[in-house]
Figure: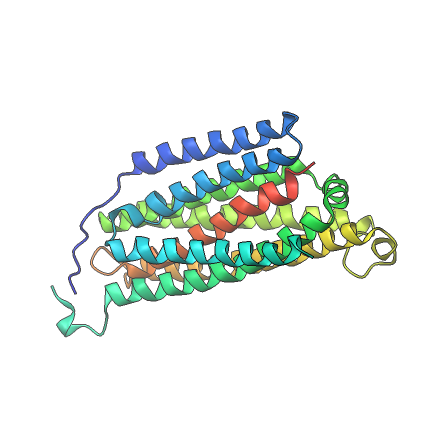
Amino acid sequence: MSNEVKHIIPYGTYLLILAILIVLTLLSVAITSIELREYTILGALAFAAIKTFLVLYIFMHLKYEQPMYRRMAFFVIILVFVVLAITFIDYIYR
Amino acid sequence: MTNIHLHRDNEASKIGMWLFIFTELLLFGGLFIVYSVYRYLNPEAFHLAAEELDRNIGLINTIILLVSSTTIAMSVSAIQMGKILHSKILVSITILLAAVFMVNKYFEWGAKIEHQLYPGSQYLMELSQGEILFFGLYFAMTGLHALHIIVGMILMLVVLARINNGKLNAGNHVLVENSGLYWHLVDIIWIFLFPLFYLIT
């Protein structure tokens, strides 16, 4: 296995992503002041999902890794959603 | 320089850390599923209980972890570029930010406990089922997360020590990368904890 680093991410990229993450955080707080009742949390979770995607892809390097890593991460996330869905199918029909 | 002469396989190390991260995603994912079900069954109680949490501390802690994720990521780039001093400073800042997060957590939990809001307390047991569940989940999930922060801090202290004595350098830095991956996971978990506990009022 080679020791060479294929792609070193510059500081500036990380700082830019941080700025975006902070903006998204503030937006997720702001969205709760809008009266959407049940859908407010979906909005906040949508922002959380985008933030997670940025952390996974840039901070954790998934964008620059071999496809295998992205596929495995994607699989695990889908797995959690599937178990969530199956659990709810049970509860909703009780 | 190949790994034939070294007892080290960087790619395997990285895969190992990712596999561990997947188990952690399933662990916290499972807890989020528990939260989802109990929230579905007790929507008003969850809204009510969430009023007790201080959104400002939650927001500050979120920003602290986002910044700390940035600094540990930058430290990986730094050591890859051979910028040893940068990497030491950046890892140190990450550890300090983690410590500040823990101090905030101490004050948060302290305030709750002072108001008799902790699992098993007389006061809590007399509230509605949904409120009891909310606080049980709150302490369990933020507590488990805080344990992960402590482990991360210890890991990063080890990294800092090894950068200091030269064991970690531009030619051998997979531990810095892996500790970064672990820290980003801790960050991601909090990214979801924050809206689900602090933003549902």
